[in-house]
Image (tube, rainbow, N blue to C red; front, side, top):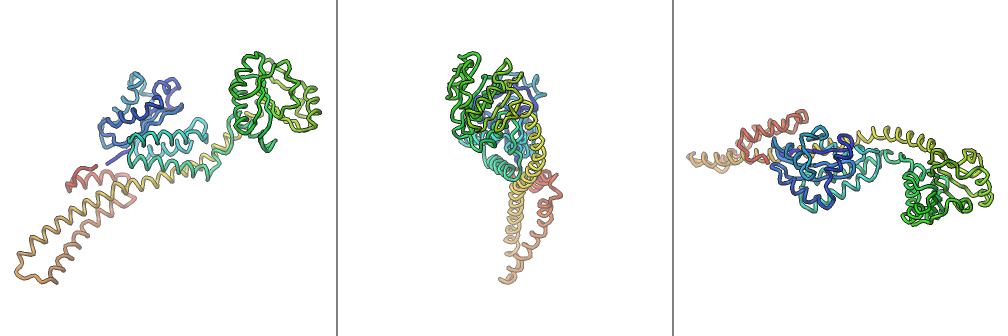
Length: 423
């Protein structure tokens, strides 16, 4: 019989330094998969390697050494001692392993619940395993089912609909104000990490022209090159203000534009809306500009409050998503149980039928006279005996009440009736 087993580390169990040490390079995933298959008892494998997790998803036969050997394989490329880092490992088996893969695909096990990138990564790494022929029918079913679970979660819940990063929230707000960011001009003040990330989100949403100003002009040139934007000297930036639709303030040193400068820019723009995102501490823009008509100002606290609210909404939606996952785990497990139960029952019936046919053939010639009608009666009677004898074990194996010890019942049948290799 096969069992599903997941062993690995993720953002909940291990620090980033350990995850980096264990993560194989993407080009090495097929080789890692083949090494996993060399572990005695492992029949199928998929290696998941992202910035938040390094996990071995396997389908294996009953073997006491499989978990120990998999832990060794996981640590072997890094050269780290398994015993010293064992507390960082997690291990899941059976239904729990299936549930884990489904939750990962649906982004319920992500650092940011609902983020969409993980599903694409799962699909890519499953495709690598499939191309390398290291995963078979069981893991094919697990992963394809996980993709449909993720689709169902996204269509039936709003777990991914509320932005939770500052950059994505700022972009969402800009899209509401301008309806579309196509053709909008962005001015990025300062090239800090948060400012650049916000500008990147805005560009991805359609803002086609980005001007970059920084107190060090060389840094502005470098950042502008990355965005395909235009560097602007910080001392001349006020002259560009009337052209700009969105201003992202991420510059140290405090105020860059006072209320008077922005009022002048709005007159030149003939009241066309302007959106200011102030990510700087101390702030780059005078808070009073929010009173101007058609000026929209959000500072870091405003965006953080929206982020917190959206995270709470995602948590509420995640409860609904978890129920969907549990439903799909039940469905998958029913399929897997049938996959194991049906061959055993078929083998048992074949065994009984072989004995019945042999005994009928041995007995009938010993009778002095047997008509065709008598022969038919004997066939029906012996078939009825076999059916009645097999009815109870068949019903027991198909009874949901026995699922918790189904493997024990299957093993007993194989052992008692000599049905051969359980695999």
